[in-house]
Figure 1 (cartoon, one colour):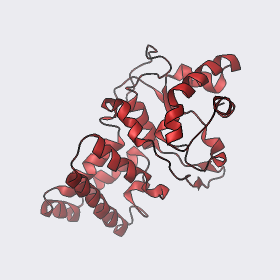
Figure 2 (cartoon, one colour):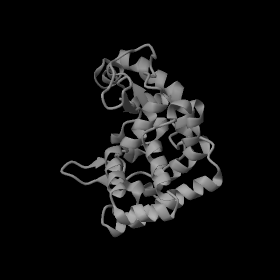
Figure 3 (cartoon, helix red, strand yellow):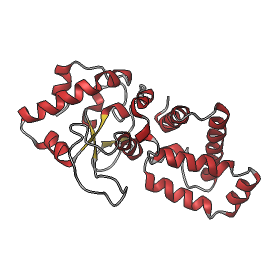
Figure 4 (cartoon, helix red, strand yellow):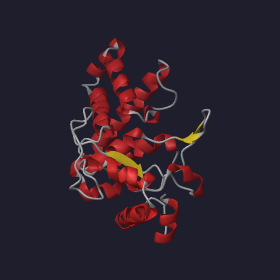
Length: 237
């Protein structure tokens, strides 16, 4: 599977988890495929709507389409099928419903291709803001190390502020044949636990690292990331 269509595959699985009929799933995917062609013609995207990994950029695209007379006419002829597909994709992208998925999020744990390196002055692996947002939503905006940890209400979400942490850091991606930017590898943490993992002393970090391993080992394996505890402790620093 090309990494360009990772979000498409996740979206299909998400729709099935929330009990959408196969016919509805096909309508939404077909609508997004048409929107992709529409946006390419207008030079708003390069290859697919799924190439957009930032929620803010997706919202800009939706606003653009809502103000495009050709798209609005098309949507009316299609009985709002195109806007319905896009709106449901936005709900997916922002993590709506992920907080009610509980263990069902494990149905999204699949092996994915390694993402390309973003070429800048300093090369870095592309990572999805959408997947990180969904992972935090699925954890209910609670620290996965201790749900009693409290922070503050984030202006951007209206929920308790939490951060997404790659348990196996993206900097070691070259050691793996499958992507590390997956749900199973992103842990929802309060800022204190997150900083501890990055800057804490080894003995204190080890407690959290072991906790993450035992919570995520099976899910990581389902995503093609198979590690012993010893290997995990070495990499997750």
